[in-house]
Length: 406
Ligand SMILES: Nc1nc2c(c(=O)[nH]1)N[C@H]1C(S)=C(S)[C@@H](COP(=O)(O)O)O[C@H]1N2
Ligand SMILES: [Mo]
Picture 1 (cartoon, rainbow, N blue to C red):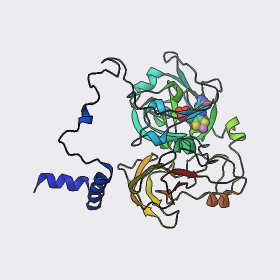
Picture 2 (cartoon, rainbow, N blue to C red):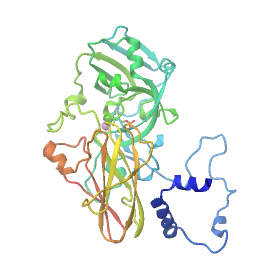
Picture 3 (cartoon, helix red, strand yellow):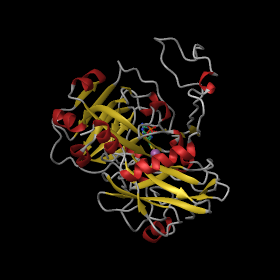
Picture 4 (cartoon, rainbow, N blue to C red):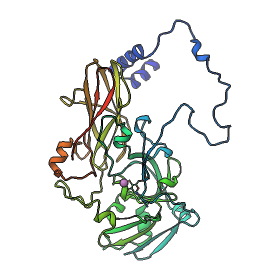
């Protein structure tokens, strides 16, 4: 068989091939001469970056930024490709700034209902068998919807994805001999906030980790250097940074985080301990403030669920009247941002485009009305994952359609 034919067919399905050709004719520029002169207008001998040996930097033409307040910053979802967040663009949320912790003085204490209370240095942690895992992190307060001029970053940029490396918490729990009666542990951070959270021990036996690396390098100070707790799929707040102490107990510790702002009446789940982040998606292209042209548009976005893998993402290009399945980028990982794409031919009429995610538990991302019906009008501002829409205007301008819930 013809080798070239096989690889073409493998790369592009029939429909996709047609679409790519259309893309070419509508988005490329046809040329008459063999090599356009514009290729040579920039001087390739001009040095723009640091010399070899220096730590690299972005092209001076690329300027992704984290949008920051005093206590948080958001990932520019609309500027990213694929699903890994560059470490310097990872969202941040801290209650009392970023502490400077000397890795040589760092210690993690594990005590309480254990046979052998122990202290581990960073070097100790690195001697245990290591594991890498790609998953998302998301703050439970990750939703903003107050105006039409919001970017994906402003709507839900309190989520990022990294490849994390560290040691499984089970490895350490076996080392200290966690007692059978222990059902909860307290995780305490070494920042000025001394942030603490209670975590069920079952999460440790499942997939919890202590991580010291992020995307191939030591984790950044903002992410908890030199080590943090990683609870894949669970609300960001439980992923205690600058982790210094774990205490085993037979009951939750009722920390400040658990007795005040995380407690509010809802009918669908007991929200005092609402750990998993529910399935969600966002279209990151086209999105405000982009402007699109009539013709073929690849609608792009990410979907994720704290309960497992994304099973399906559907896209509507007619304000939610009908839905079509989007293509998911393989491999689809457990509790991970998953890229989706949907090829759409826009006829130039005003419309709304939406996406909705379904995870492997069968749960489908709700509308804001479904959330209100389930939780009541007093549902507060945490764990909001509604389907959202972008309005495509006749002139091609894209605006967010705000969702009202209070
Ligand atoms: N020690 C400590 N851990 C913490 C926090 C904190 O302020 N102090 N903030 C929590 C919150 S609310 C979130 S959403 C995540 C944010 O992690 P990131 O800054 O690495 O994105 O860390 C959590 N862990
Ligand atoms: Mo958070």
